[in-house]
Amino acid sequence: MHVHTAEITTSAVDPNSYPEATLPEIALAGRSNVGKSSFINKMIQRSGLARTSGQPGKTQTLNFYTINEAFRFVDVPGYGYARVSKTSREKWFGMIQQYLETRENLELLLLLMDARHEPTQLDQEMYAYAETLDIPYAIILTKVDKIKKSQLNKHLSMYKKALNLPTTDALFMFSSQTGEGAEDVWDVIESIALTDEE
Image (cartoon, rainbow, N blue to C red; front, side):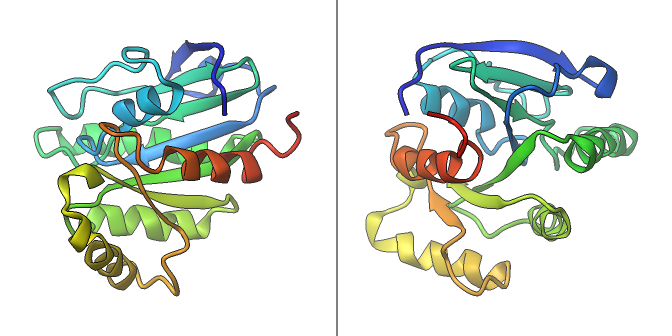
């Protein structure tokens, strides 16, 4: 995938402020500190388009990024940040749920999880929720550059067991530092979400 143009289109909190449903969308969901903004920046080779923050829980809106004027990444609010009130967490999940369940041009859901650690209860709940949606999904295991190469298979097996997956086929290793795994993720995006593109 050659990215020629990339821009943030809008930030939205409800369907009234979504952009027109004219382009395929790929949603990114994950814990607040899993590295969704870094993932976007690495995938599109732009260092500062998606703003990263030292404060987890900063993203409180659905952020729509238009790529090559052909499709969008949609960064949804991160979940699981302890300092956020229960009311805020419920509000954010309602925002995510409304988008994932009603957006007609949503083609793919990417669940980002930290490869270094076992999936949290919230990760497992998000995965279980993804299973109920009528949307293809893949699990992106981030921060793999922080794991020794000899330990990678062990971490894949840990996720397979924790999420009760039949195989590791839905698990994709990724590093926003080195770019490892980016081509594999683009292959998934292109084969599932961009099948009508040239």
